[in-house]
Amino acid sequence: MKIRKNILLFKLYYLFSAVWPLAALAIVFFQKITGSYAFALGVFSIVNIAQSVAEVPTGVISDKIGRRKTMILSSALTALAYIIFALAGTFAYKYLLILGAVIWAVADAFASGTDDALMYETMEELNKADEYDIVYARSKTFDQIGMGMGALIAAVVTYFYSLATLAWVSVAFSVVPIVVCLHFVEPKIHNGEDCTSMKHFIIAIKAFLQNKKLRMLSTIQMLSRGISFAGHRFEGAYFNMLIPTWAVNIARIIKQTCGAISFYIAPYFRKFGFYRILVASTIGMTIIKTTAVVLNNFATPFIQSCVNIFWGTTSTAESALLQKELSPKQRATMGSIVSLLGGILSAVIYVLVGVVADTTSVWFAVVALIASNLFISAGYYWMLKKYKQ
Image 1 (cartoon, rainbow, N blue to C red):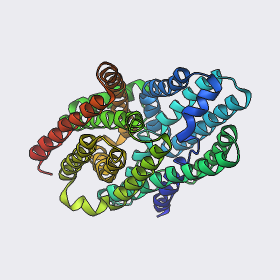
Image 2: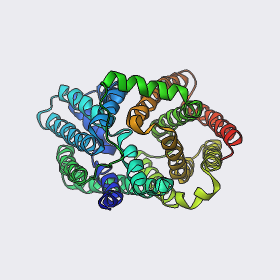
Image 3: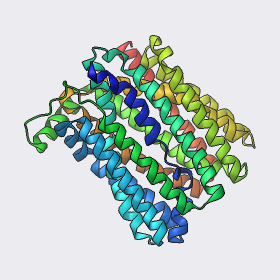
Image 4: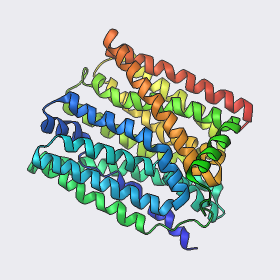
């Protein structure tokens, strides 16, 4: 079947969409343009807020115009955002960063939910929906590899040239995902709907509210992602208290390597059941993180980075369970509703972590995040007992 080529294209898409050479140095690049770390961090805040707002309408658009067109649009907008960032560096005009941030957020919102929906529907058309998690894990392995490639390219470019040059190199690589998306085959299973966008959204909301299992699963996943993302962003500040700044990058390389390994081995554990995988993985993460913070010395960042050995198994199991519960005709819209609520929850967690760090200490804030993982493990254990999967 012609649609079979999508499986290879997913790997290429995740590989090249993850290659953003400016990623690790974006905050430095933005600060050089604005002269302010507050403004630079504000760019990322705008991305988070704008993406949350755009999640649902872009999900509706995806369900109505199709996955392939939505993925092309997402990649094209991402490239446009990177061009605007590069122009901001060339002309030292900081307000271009705000425009770029909004476009980047909308691009991410278009891809959010649509990429998973396209993958699941591809497997459905191949009559292999039960192997979705295998394709997901294998594809996401390339995502981790792509981030590593981006870091390597950045090291070479910044050694010989400047951050402004690196921004334009990032633009060059952003063209590749557009080419990849042009070759995706639209699943026949997805035919769109003739109803209005508002009616489509209302149908998706009703389907979400009526599915108790989906509500419970998505609530736990939103909390899990919010805690994980807050920890990921915040760990740099903690690590930098224990080791030199350059060594923090070594810890991040270890983390991404563990992530790639985790996605690669994830399919081998599917026989144990996704809920069992989630319970074991979340407990494993908590043990590694706890061990690291108890030591609280130079070894802590490198030990804690090994936590990503469970990231691939966790992410794969969560996605597989979620896709099984989403309604076929509103798959992207319902996925976007989950992402919207998750984005809001993440923003709240970011604020809480910041308040805890300011009023107590960075170490205590990290400990609080780790302790919160116990609720995630308990939630998945409850669902394991309830649904026996």
